Length: 266
Image (cartoon, rainbow, N blue to C red):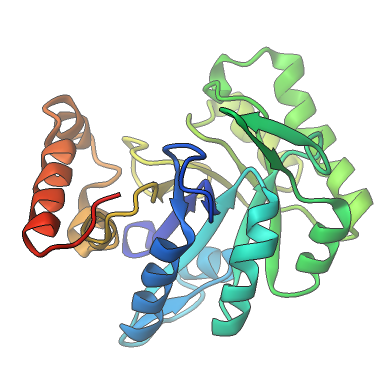
């Protein structure tokens, strides 16, 4: 399986408001990232295409495969991101909990709105894959059994009934499903389980470790889409990189390099 040859990117949100939260990046930083990818021999895959590539049912010649995912499903995606993706004809996957559709939440002192069912239906008919997303920030293996059943079984039915499309992907912020949860996902027709790297295990469709992009620093982005990062991202050695804060050291070096070049660090 070619999971380690494919970059699957995990965004939380792209916003014009620079004060919303740490995990959100600015629209200007995202535009720069998108422009780079579109101009430098990357080929964008939908999640269906990404699965086929991982299973060696799809070939990519002389290009780097990449697939974009967006968690939570905020209105910023519909207003700011989707138009950009449409301009470049880029497919992507949006993961959202059906219980949050059409609602709002407070992020610090700001109010954030979630996508509506109308938004999701429109996007589902225009090159956007919609998937179910876990409501909480728990590791899925720590959730009560009835909550796991509701997320995996009920959410799928709710979304398919409202959108008229098949829901094939389930996403979480963290955690790799145990065997019981994995069997539940498979028996309910999910093609893949999307989490965050590192997964500390070999390539597996039910533990796809996505690369989280949560920083405006372009040098960090370049590191995260590199072949070296892909090589290490799900290996057990990754825990030592985190344990000794080598990723933070790289970040600080990148910020210093930007300041030396007169680039504003945000």
